Length: 254
Ligand SMILES: Nc1ncnc2c1ncn2[C@@H]1O[C@H](COP(=O)(O)OP(=O)(O)OP(=O)(O)O)[C@@H](O)[C@H]1O
Ligand SMILES: [Mg+2]
Figure 1 (cartoon, rainbow, N blue to C red):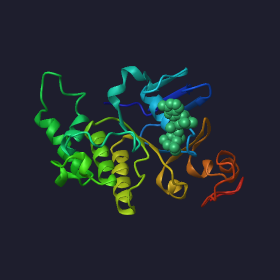
Figure 2: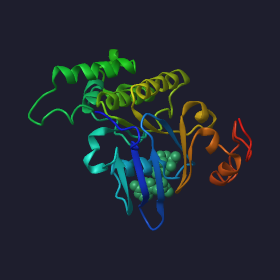
Figure 3: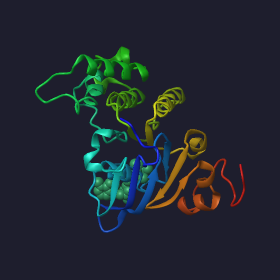
Figure 4: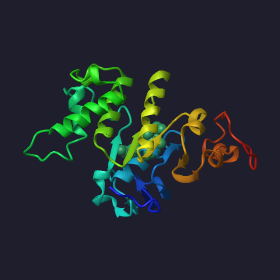
């Protein structure tokens, strides 16, 4: 699809979501440029997963709008792929690696049909990219955590979506797998995709992402890592509980 680079890939305006009396997300407005690799950072419970789900429409918005390439999100769901946070998935469900990856194609397969040669090719390619091709017949519950993460990434890639939303894809994976997954994300960016990645590790955030989105119920910052990783901002968001690597004092330049 041809995309106008001036239209944000994701535009959230005044996004507010609450599960109970206190909003988990309050008045968040942000415009994410197409083709960027965005890291969403913030402490536990700061609303990172909620932001991702609110963009997808998986949680009800109290207030606010989300546009995907200028269209209301409800009309553009096919352009979004999602990798949920681990723990949000029932791993005992009896499906194979290949079937999980094929789920990424379901939006393209009519309910009366079965996967086409194109669908099978897309799935095989995606499994190869994440280096899980040799496990394609394995039950998903019989994989390690890092391998499961890679299969979920393959599902998102197989979908061929313009925007990938990944909730802590590096959680619990070893350093080699993290590097491999990161390389997959970079390839997706090189192919023009927009990636929004919830990320826990501030130490690697600056080198990994084009933009950081700092969240704690409200949006505290969105921009290049050096603009967001400011000590005063971080100590406010993390309430001084954090020893931050590579942060800058106010006004300091990298
Ligand atoms: N389904 C739910 N029902 C009620 N409250 C919820 C629900 N999901 C999240 N919350 C609350 O909303 C707030 C934000 O949660 P969210 O999962 O978005 O945080 P997070 O930044 O992703 O945290 P983590 O780093 O632990 O994954 C938290 O206070 C959490 O307890
Ligand atoms: Mg979360």
